[in-house]
Amino acid sequence: MKTNNLIKKYGEYTALNDISLDIKKGKITSFIGPNGAGKSTMMHLISRLVMADSGSIQIEDKDLHSWQSDELAKHLAILTQENHLEVKLTVEELVAFGRFPHSKGRLNEEDKEKIEEAISYLGLNELRYKFIDQLSGGERQRAFIAMVIAQDSEYILLDEPTNNLDIVYTRNLMQTIRKLCDELHKTVIIVLHEINYAAYYSDYICAFKDAKIFAYGPVKEVMKEDVLQEIYGVPFELSEYQGKPIALYY
Image 1: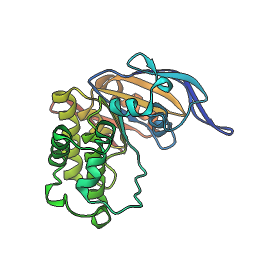
Image 2: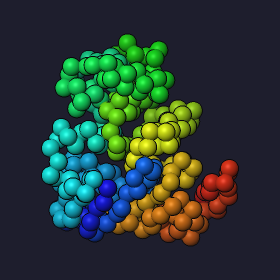
Image 3: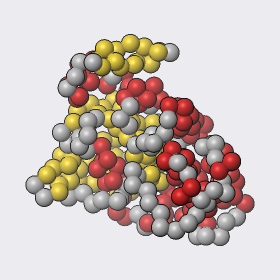
């Protein structure tokens, strides 16, 4: 996936300014940066939820806007921050929606296997027959992530998926994302505010600041004290855990 000279404005406000990015296939790339830096806008552009004012995006060397929607959905899945349902669904029914680009509502054995795998990945077996509106915020978030996983697309886009998750489920989710990349060779793009989770579980980090890419590269190239201080405006001290950089800030 590549983006070239993307610009997005809302009136006089520039949300993204001249963004060119080459997302590495089969890797986890985390978008980090302060609020309003452009992370979620970037996700919305590459998932075709929002149109860029100028620039281009290619998926599999094909312009994003040349894809038919049903075909694109087989290659790309996204979980946004805003997930609202007006219909009453169980967890299992919600996860099954992830198979719609493949099944068109007629589930076959492969679809059912993918649904079961996704429910198992997110530890939702005991909740599968509960209605979504009966769940806690964290449980609901896990159900939506399972729906995205069931879609079984090559590209998985997750916009702040750890919202509403406690420490244990956040760790489990990040381990699952790592597993999807390592074992199933998915390409994952994830917006995270927790920079240490980004550092520990990602292959690449793309840091946004003031609607531009401030730094992009392998984790250790971005997780540097001076780089982080410039991005966030506070001093950082780096240490290591299991060979991965960990940032402390004051």
